[in-house]
Image 1 (tube, helix red, strand yellow):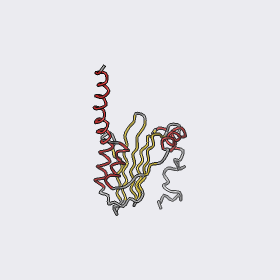
Image 2 (tube, one colour):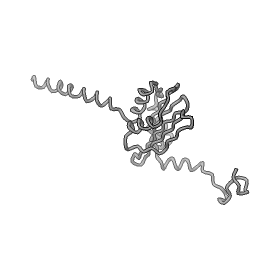
Image 3 (cartoon, helix red, strand yellow):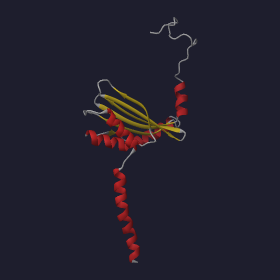
Image 4 (tube, helix red, strand yellow):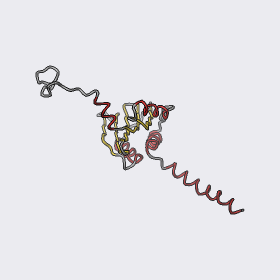
Length: 173
């Protein structure tokens, strides 16, 4: 009977360090946001009920958009080294994410990083945008086929593709 009592105690003793170590090695969206908060001594605002909003957007877009994660940091006054920020994001997202855009403003107070990775028939998008004193971090899963169909509604077709402008004189503005 004493042995049976030791089994749960041993399990608990082994599980606690595993849980503590695993939570310290946070990755993905939450890992990026936590690293930014820690490195730049800022606090990210998360949108309340985002899980519900994500569910509704999934239904409203007929599966086109799902898995939304959003964090906003206001009053971001720290100097940002673009290389350091890029490395931090890449480390926390993991090697399966590929950076497709990195833009830095001339004055250095703006950074935009966009990453993508395949999720089966879907595409994961991760966007970090620092504009002056505001940073937005967004992650979403999209269905590229559905997105392409939705965007094609807004495609403008010219009657004569050889004419490059609306004036009909072949010159561009």
